Amino acid sequence: MLLTDGLPNDTESLRVYESGVLDVANMESIDLVVKLRLALEEISEDILDILLTHSTDSAAMLRRNKGVSDVVVSAQIKRWHALHALEVFYRDAFNNQLNDRYQVKALEYQELSRGARQHSVRFGIGLVNNPIPRADLPQVAFLIGSPPPASYYIQVSWVSSTGQEGAPSILSAVDGGANQVPVIQAVNPPAGVIGFNVYAGLTPTGLALQNSSPLAAGESFTLNATGPVSGRAPGSGQVADSYITGGSSFNRG
Picture 1: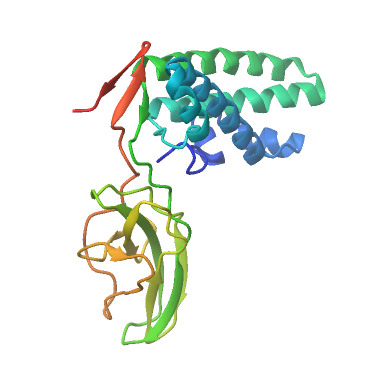
Picture 2 (picture 1 turned 180 degrees about the vertical axis):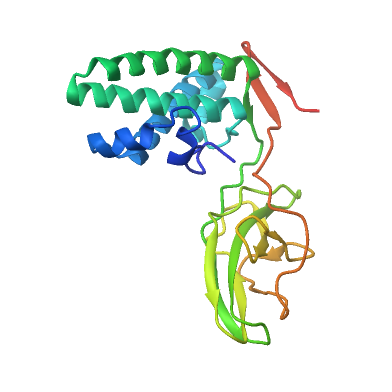
């Protein structure tokens, strides 16, 4: 996924690093999602500063206009975001309560976040040449068919003329009654895409590609009358075409 596609981590992801964080958030009435968003804003500003540092004078204005819309979320950046969110969270908890335990946690995650930033920079900030934004939630209607009642899980993703695929939309769940077949349409196509892919399944983890070739923007897709077909699972979005690291850039491949 791209850095501008949404939050790299959710509240459940933070529990990998701090098992009791949801309990603390509830006890201190702190909105963790707000802290995740703030952490994303802060690391995005930091990454933009890194990219500007490595930009020539002539490219700096283009970079300012582009921002971080072409930055890929690597495993290193994902970890950096999670640790920085916990730093922001415990910093706020300490400021609210002046509890020394929260201050210790804030300082601990500040140090871990600093280390994660260094790892991200050392690995390299991945960039794509033609960024494809994450797709919005699709529109789903129903036609008369033959399947029994079922819950359908659906995602869509945009595809470029070169075959690159953006991050899939947030998982959508729809309930179909008896003899109802889902009809799916991607909405709000961004510039630079030629179509979209549809992924569907009967479980949240069982999604598979339903179309044999990308569907044109504005076109709708009707699922198989007997239910979703088998195929490859949805991906996580674009991979980097180049990296900024150590003061220079190098191309993938």
